[in-house]
Amino acid sequence: MQDHPTITHAELTLTAAQALIAHGQGIASARGMALSLAVVDRSGHLLAFARMDGAALVTIDVAIGKARTAAFLKAPSKLFEDMINGGTPSMATTPGLLPLQGGMPVLVDGAVAGAVGVSGSSGDGDQAVAAELAGALAAA
Image (cartoon, rainbow, N blue to C red; front, side, top):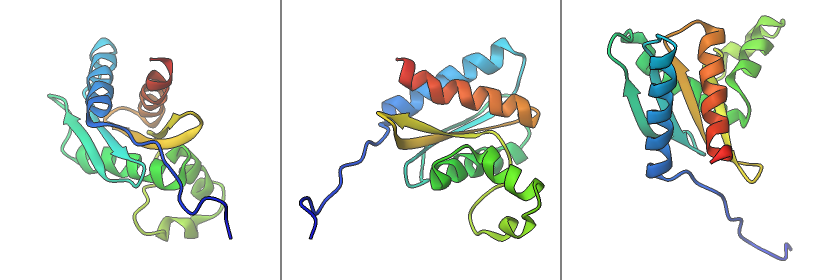
């Protein structure tokens, strides 16, 4: 039997999630992007979301899906995209995961506390903003 029968996990707060959304809007505005931005908790449930003026409607579900994927995998959603593109197309049938880059886990003391998802730019552009957002909390 374990010495400790429970595990304590870091969780993003609503305040932190809203700050990440605001920061992402600032990054997008400075780069001339119209994005949807999502923040989920460590279990993939939505904490905060914004669709900027001009962002396509499809970006709503895509941003949330990318964030959920990063939370579920505890890794960037790009990893999942790379697996499929690298010759494992059967992974595309995994329920609830979106194989597109632009989702990043948010780490607190090395543990996943949630994730961010970005949609509305190119895959590389979404990934760059997501990576910057995920690192912003650690830098704060």
